[in-house]
Length: 314
Length: 291
Image 1 (cartoon, chains in turn blue, orange):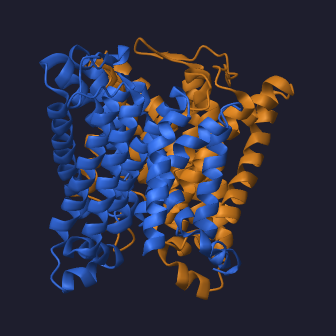
Image 2 (image 1 turned 30 degrees about the vertical axis):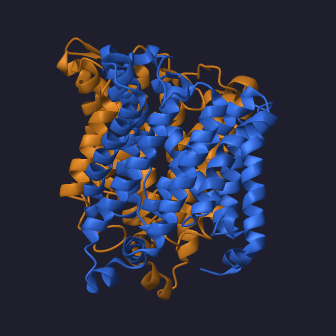
């Protein structure tokens, strides 16, 4: 136990000094990585625990970011209220997107949610008076989160770390509760889950709603950190990156989700010299993980156990 | 106005149908929705581009050579990464095809860059004028290619032993295997055919929309919608769905105050999947992805 406490203290200390040890560009990248980790953790609730494929996370992220920015810029909302509004809006969207999930599974759900993610930037483009259209929109610099300017990246870093830790604690608690067990029962066999009296429809919709709320929170926090939003940011590939990040990190593992979110941001930064080589690497890692390490990087001690798949005749 | 939009939509729809046919062939034999189809097509279109413009091979010869490369490439992709995971959960299958998509998209960008390339047109013929509307030579080639592909596939499926084996595989893979059909070879063959159809569509549409590593992604997204409408197991459905989506897109783009094509696609996909998940033209599916 004391060893664990020691590790926690060391880890917390490292995280606490991190923003002072690096330049502001790395601070920004770290904030992005934390934001992506939040979204991957929320994706894990739907995909990893409840077993429903979704490519809708990019859409939630976009809606969250735009709702917060529009509420502050056009309607003079205070930033905390605007971020809460983001979470409510994406929660409602998640609830609505959960409804088709009652009828659809597998590839069909993946396609439907992918089209949702594609439709969101188009709606943003179609409302230029509200969203600025293709010119984008600025988050007013005066917006503060209880006195903190999130454009100050060190402040933003700590806010995101605290939120991520809080969400991980929620995740851990949920996993041990009736809710988490119901999600996983649905994932493993819907028929078995239904036969022991789990209301599948209710839990599927809850998974999508909760996931939407967290992705919207991440979007709402991203808005003041980035300071400027443009629909081009939220393209086809964004949702694919979130999906891939979760699988690379570890499907069904909250720490894997965090690792995946960090990797998907860090990889392009590490290989920024060679144009788009990060996509080749990331796609390659995704394929290799699926073939050889189904539990993702978080499951690295079992590297290679999945390779039997390559040899197993069909 | 409307007639012009419909004709333009049919031409675009023919491209969606060509790509969609590939998606259907793959789905029928391996129950995988190939999210990499767009980037497979893009990479092969770039290969054709290089053969035509840099190696100076005449258009038709380069086109044919690209299709041969496409066929082999499709088989290669199936054999190396798809086959080991095809029997696992849909999340794994979707993940692998997305991984392939990322690798191929990165490869196209790395090798050919993001600058806009103009792809050689199949014909400089002026086309024909019917009732005051001009249909360009390129558009006629696209419609002809769709017709030719449909005839070829109908012949293949209906009148050859390989086609019979493919149909048996899509009906019931285990039973087909027991009858002595080499199911995994059939799966490879279908990925090869799908890549050929994707390369054809890519090389025919690129003169009109120019060529960049991401240009075909939206084309293929429309093809997904087309296949959802027609049904993932229906060859005819892919054609009808493709033409339908092309016309809808054209009309929405012509009349809507803003570009809401993807919103229209989302609504169509949602309505079709929720109310008739097997698609409009496919027989009801009893398992595999549907409740």
